[in-house]
Image 1 (spheres, helix red, strand yellow):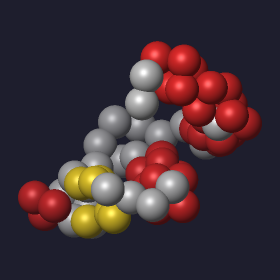
Image 2 (spheres, one colour):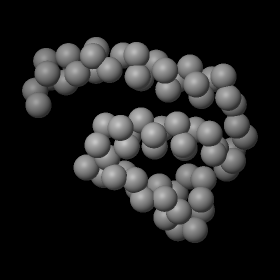
Image 3 (cartoon, helix red, strand yellow):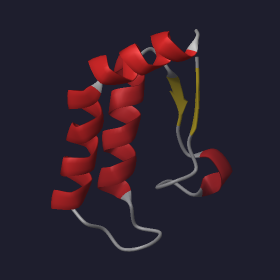
Image 4 (cartoon, one colour):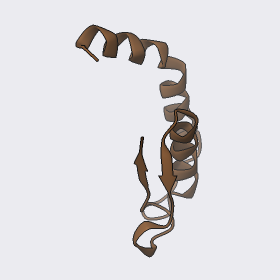
Length: 68
């Protein structure tokens, strides 16, 4: 993917990206208790085709791996 393709993809995903930011802003969480944030971001990544491995490192709320 070249720079122009990347920019076009990001522009196409503007609503998804701003939706994540808006959801996180509306649902603040304290440090090391980011359950809503993790579920929100992982949900978006799963819809985009990423595989999500939860509970990595026995820390359930933020130790996630995502990969294509």
